[in-house]
Image (cartoon, rainbow, N blue to C red; front, side, top):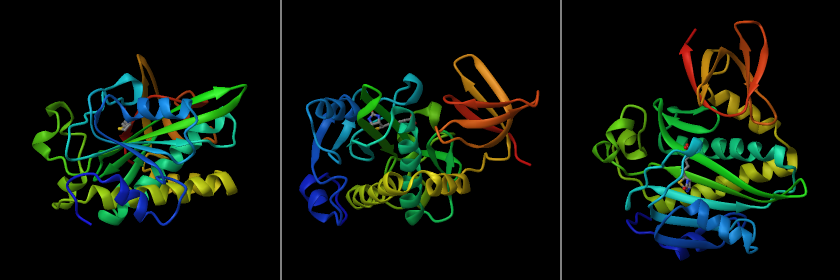
Length: 267
Ligand code: BTN
């Protein structure tokens, strides 16, 4: 199924499940697929509706960063979900998505995939995927969640912006071969549906366990930076609200809900 160009009908028609990706909106170029999906969600688009763009002019990353989104090489997709849960459980959806992406990427590059809190997917210790979830709430209920996923698929080393070359990678860089984005996105939507169903029907515990198994920072000394604040200590685990639990040098247990985490020293 190798295909340079996107073909939304091929995606819609080749899915085995109907939960995610049954309806795809495709844009050769857009500002941000998250913004497109948010618009669609606001006018009632059903759960599982997906937006795909070949390129983004205003790709959004976490913490107001830019997500590099050139054409012809990567996956930029946003999915509308309408979970029956409270807003404070929404981070569990991003964590489940990280697990789903890690599992599908592991099929292309076995045993080299890791997760980094909050939900970066790493390949050979470099970032290959980022996830940005946004939500609309009303009366302490989730109206919808937009789950935005960017995967570096076929981008080459020299096409990565120089400032991220030491910390980012792509599937093609790591495997040495070109990957079909269509095949990958079909697998991604099916795997996302599997883990989303698991979360909705059976709760967070299996997802948390799988996440912890793939996250090398647990039990290590870490540093989390958020704006100008720095928290250091031993990463003890993941809380049910998606925050990282840290035991600080002052023997205090704190929960961190946002930031950039790095392992200080592997022991
Ligand atoms: C991160 O900073 O790690 C999150 C990056 C999320 C990027 C994806 S690409 C598809 C979707 N549209 C966006 O504008 N952002 C997300």
